[in-house]
Length: 310
Image 1 (cartoon, one colour):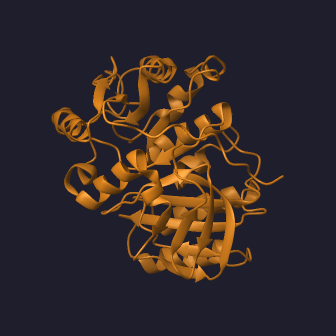
Image 2 (spheres, rainbow, N blue to C red):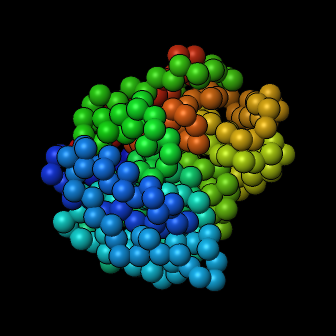
Image 3 (cartoon, rainbow, N blue to C red):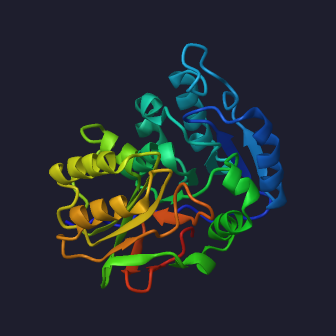
């Protein structure tokens, strides 16, 4: 059975209260003020969750204990005053806290937009599988690119407030590895987190009929190949409708990465496009996850059948 579209949260409007939390690593303290200023500039009322500034004293890569980070997420999602949940940053650690969330208790909560990427991929997968809600693969408010690059900032703002303006996402840097067009539901995110999720509660059995989105940073080509091989062996490539590769920033010269992508996806008989311009890059485009789209690999375009948010 082909992957089905997920429920869309509502779009944001000026005056909305939104939660900002740290599900993974701590953000630089000095960036919270700039992030909140940017969100207030959009007309939002951002609220910092209680543990968002924490640091776990035993492992400073984590923004507080696993239980505290899970509690912040659960409280934010369950609270009807919040229209959206922003991850302050990625880093590492969402896979440590995701099992501490009571997903059954959140199923009756009103869907809301989850915004983030990189390590937040674990939460995107969990929200899709446990709650059946589409989410937003987009820049996080303490990320330097969000704060300093206007196209990145504006593409996310439009996706959240006027999503009909971003139903067509055209990448000027995209190139077809395998040409053609296909329709499917978008899924994916950070390659390392997708591969790391194999065998967990957030692992999808298959992605039949899906358009797979992947990106990553600071990985050597052989490690990218190892992760893709792991996904292939787990059956993730069986029945894919198409593949969209985003940025592979800080992964060394690009040609070896292209070779890996060609080798892993070139024999699937589906459209494959590279360098689509989302992920750890500048500028970075926002891409909805869990919604049906048409991929035109030759034109470097994703055209969503409905706006990202209702």
